[in-house]
Image 1 (tube, one colour):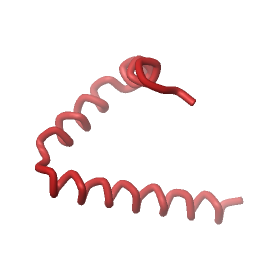
Image 2 (cartoon, one colour; image 1 turned 45 degrees about the horizontal axis):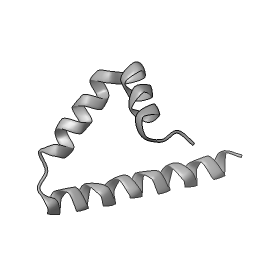
Image 3 (cartoon, helix red, strand yellow; image 1 turned 90 degrees about the vertical axis):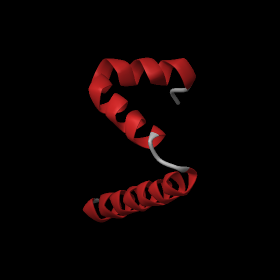
Length: 56
């Protein structure tokens, strides 16, 4: 598993502009909006996992 600084370097090398855009967006959210966004992301991850299971 990639952790800490290694993850940061990986993100910067692969998709720096996209990572910056996401970080800017998240930093603009208030605590309530951050919690709601996290719920949205968790839902998207769940749908992706369900779709992956049904493919195989």
